[in-house]
Image (cartoon, rainbow, N blue to C red):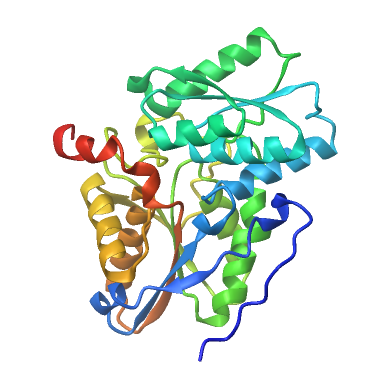
Length: 312
């Protein structure tokens, strides 16, 4: 018999962030007998992704110290998920939001952010997330009095959110069993903050960063750091190793997790699970590997399916 999950009563939508479930991947872990594989469902956050945590932390910290007020417009570059979170919390907190994103991000993310009243500015799709970063910096430099620029790639509140939330929750959920943690590199906040919290645990936990294997890749939200603007919050000494994952492996694993586990996850989450399974297959004496489901797969249905077959 299933144990009932206590219902929560929230004073506002910001209280719905965090406390996301951890699900065991029992079908996938058949490929690594004796090792547990766990996936933290960050798409259960109200904005549908792991980015709810840092977006809310950055906004709260800026409101608290006066950098963000109702007479300023919050502006940042985003490939989509952080933008959804900014838009959601901006609407809830009475903050105007403007986002700069590559014009080829999924239509779903454009539609969702606009639904909250957010103003979108599009950058060159061929320049990826770096082009959006450069454009937003130009806009802020031209009108600094108009904008609050949280800069998710350089804001310490980004990893702080994962140190206070994601890492703590993982330890509460699997406790002494955890041996390995795997997470992709985008802004790098999830890896930086969660790993720092896990490294404070009494037992050693091996933390593995996943990044795209190539500069030209289709793992939206992840960065190939050797060919990208490296986020200021990134410290290469924090992860114990970095594991390259191809676009095809990330996509195929996302499809497999949907078919075998009943979890519809995005492609960066597929890359995370592929990385977690790769790590788990190395282990000869058992272990417990935890990774992150950054978002759901339904944000990628169009036009990315066509691109998978015809672009790469």
